[in-house]
Image (tube, rainbow, N blue to C red; front, side, top):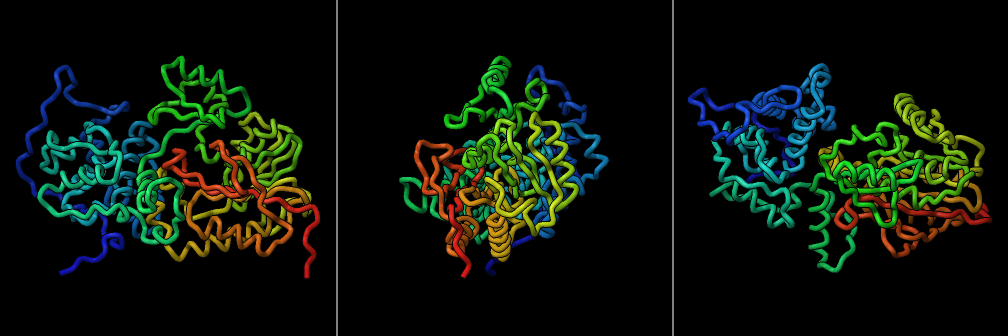
Length: 481
């Protein structure tokens, strides 16, 4: 009998366990290693492996069936008190394992694996470059010979990644279509990425990039970045400084920033390269007045303040008080005093209309750009929500248009790549507002110029997928008919 499309399936991982019986033989212990490996807090690796396997079924059901974000699902499954008692290393292992399971569920679910340990093991093999203690424990539980397993996390292509799946499945027939790991709607919504390869290959390169765990990008704010990069180098790290944005650098993904003085004082922060590119495109002058009509964080507002060297005014607005309070705390701990977090009714500009030099519009979106960091988002956002996002984005641009002065700037950005949320929104706005036009700007990460709109691509720039457009209001607004 034909199976249903696995992408539409919402069957969570099995919580069934093998019947009691003799334990499989323990893997050989390397010479000189401790008898029992532990996390930094002292929890044994077998205990951690068991914990992850225990909570995985509920976490996956909450994500796939209830649309819950992964972090919240893990807290709910584990319990808030257990989270508070866990260490950073514990949380990292749990999050890494379950993020991999969600990321590769499109390939894992059709196999109908009986044991949750098998599912977790396969997800680890597909996502990682080495078989550490915890997946070896899962292999033993699932009666898999880990000596015959291999990791494919560094596979350069989809075909090479599929070999890991096929070796794991042994003699079973497997489906290894890359599109199975993504929602069906992305096929129609994805614009053609740039490149010299065939259209099919360019799309697959994009999918391959968003299927990777994110790179660690850091940004220096409020001071000369060179001493900070030197501090990291002296500690044995190798920051790769972005050529066009020298305050941003990529680090090894496992770097712990907490020991660095620049991090503790707030000069060094974690921020995706694409986010920093947004404020570069804004290009605000010191002394200007900007409105951050954003997604509910202080990230872009502080980036604007940094570009303005702390001079002028940046107003960041929030419809929800908890988000405003959280942003206000970050702003107070920053070196900038020209930023304020204000409560907002969501309907009117926070000041006299037509008086802002610039408005940064970063509304909620489908989050394709976040798939590397938050793989669960791909399964949470449904096709019919894309139109709702686009409607809200157009309303945000309409509101921004009432706030900006003649000759002023609107920068529109969304961390996604769908056609209707990017060029579609901007073109519809320009058709209705003849007093605005695209404002060409230099590409923030390359040597080229742009016509006023640009896509940032993970397979090219190693950052989140993001769209940026810059609009300028003409000196004489169009008269209403």
